[in-house]
Length: 147
Picture 1 (cartoon, helix red, strand yellow):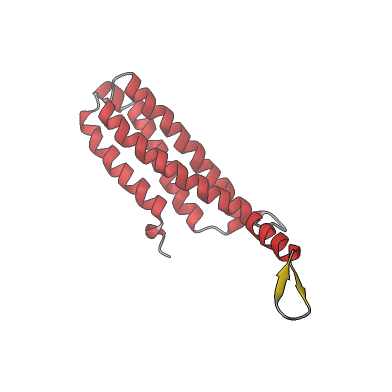
Picture 2: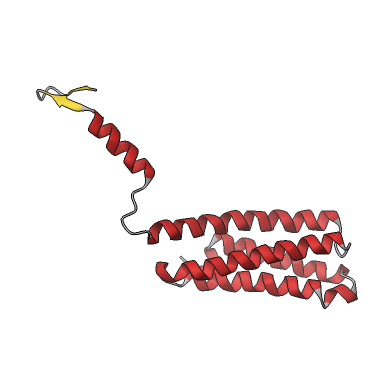
C-alpha cells in the first residue's frame, strides 16, 4: 500500500489544506504565535504518520504515541484559538471534527499495534469460540451435539 493511501494520512493532509486556508484570516499578532505552533504540531502529526507507515510493527508504537501527543496538543491550540477569538466557532468546529476523526483513527492504529506486539495474545472472540466448542460433545459419531 502506498503511504499516501493511508486513510489517516489523507485526513491529516486535508486538514492541513483547510488549516492553511485559514491563515489569511488569522490576525497577524496570532499568526506568528499560536497559529504557527498549531501548524507545527499538525505537520509533526503528518510526519509521524508517514514515519510509522514505513516502520516495522515493533517500532511503530513510540512513533504513533508521539503522533497522538502532538494531535492532543493541536486540540489544545485550536481550542485556545477559539477562546481568544483568533478563529470563529464555525472554523473551530470544522477543525475539531477532523481532529476528532483523526484521533479515533490513530487510537485504533495504536490499539492494533499494541495487540500485535503482545506475546501469546489470544483475541477474546477466539476464547468464546473455544469455550463453545469445548462445551459441546459429539455422541456416537452420528453428529448429534449435546451440552
